Image (cartoon, rainbow, N blue to C red; front, side):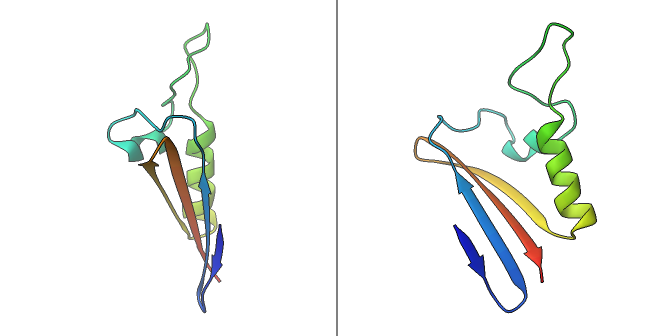
Length: 79
């Protein structure tokens, strides 16, 4: 969902793919963390890049949590 207040835009995305197994869950935003590995043993840049753009460039916040049968990601931006 998308929510707007006087000073913040919040976007929440949810899936039903079983949740995130990584512990602690916030470590999924670290560089090179991935549940999938390629033959050259590299992976895990996508969430790190998204987190860096939102937090450093847009001065926002990113969080993740497990929900029933899936995961929820919340992005908040100052407006």
